[in-house]
Picture 1 (cartoon, rainbow, N blue to C red):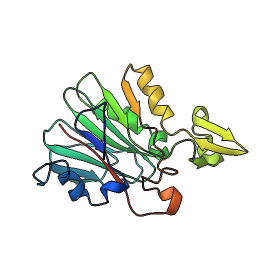
Picture 2: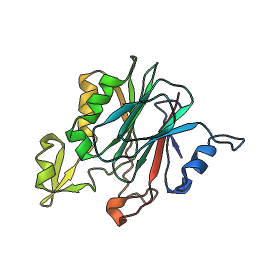
Picture 3: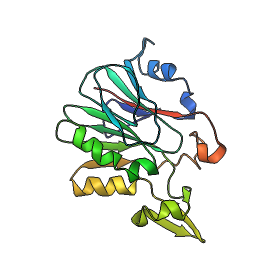
Picture 4: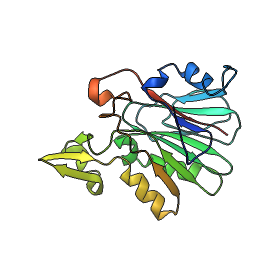
Length: 201
């Protein structure tokens, strides 16, 4: 389990933690009981964000809440888990290139309440391994690296740039889910297993 040193009460799981969400959440409580109510997303690579007050599974790729004791959960295997916190609320986003193209991060910034925004981006496919073709490269010309006649995407660069423009503090994991065997990667082996990232107030 990787605890964010940047945002309190937020974590990113890896292979060692297994793939059972209930067990992962219980591991954060010494007594072993369920940590919190859980809110998840069906994650369809959209830019839809739900503002919620209860647990459940929501038709979105982003969740925002100001309600205490609800854990917002993101499932990933190469996309970015993006956790956001202010003094008043939190958000969790599932962000791949389609979400970036449709401005899911900036939409979340408009929905989240409070100031003193902090952003933590968890392990994801990094530019060392995230090979793309022309159709994706032309959407993100400033985020493409070229090596040996191949193109690779820096998936987090657009979010980093947005944070810099808005004077928002951000921390981005350097762990690559594709080449680091401590993480599940769909690009590497088509696995159905996922990392879980979660945040709560």
